[in-house]
Every structure is written in structure tokens, then in C-alpha cells.
Length: 132
Image (cartoon, rainbow, N blue to C red; front, top):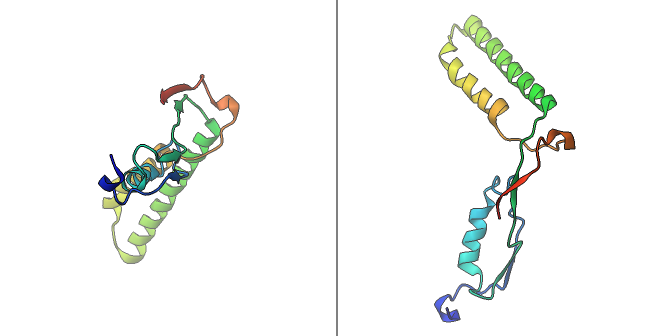
């Protein structure tokens, strides 16, 4: 490739903090790759950081699980209060939305990933590299 083949690719170095949770969470990788392909000089351009290793390990945090269960239960209790009040005050039956609301809350409180600092004892086995 010659510079004439890529007139817009004039950047020598791209420095970016692109790593989200589990390297991919914040979706910065796509933007970085587009910038690389559009602006970085072929063959001589540098990216920092340019490499990473992804590790995975099983963890258990009973306290966090209890907090999430409690928050889910509170959300559903609030929903039930709302649903009951709406029916009594306005005569509107919101029960048709119960199943979808429950799924949304369960997905958020019980299945969504969250950032947290875990104590060392929460890691149940040695981390293993899954992507270099």
C-alpha cells in the first residue's frame, strides 16, 4: 500500500481507552476499528493498547445475589402497589402488563451483568485465558 492508496490515512498513532467491562461491554471496539481503518497509516501506524488477554473465572458473591434478589422483590412490590392503586383510583386494570414487567425486572436485577469489586474469596477457581 502506498500513501496515495489511502489519502485519508494519515495518523501515526491511535491511543484509546477502548476496553470496557470484559473488554467489550461499552462497545468502543467498533469505533476504534473504524478509526483505525479510516485514519491509521497502513503498515507503520501504531495503536496503544494494541493487545490484550481476556480471562474468565467462576465467581460467587452471595451478598450481591441477596441484594439483587431484594431489589427485584422491591421492584415487584412497587409494581403491585402501583397496579392496585391504579385499579382502585382510576378503574384501570394493569394486570395485562404484569408478565412483561416481571420479565423486565428479572432480566435487569437477576441476569444483567454489573460492575463490582469482588473479594478474592469470591473467585472459585484460577482464571483461564480465553482470548489473546
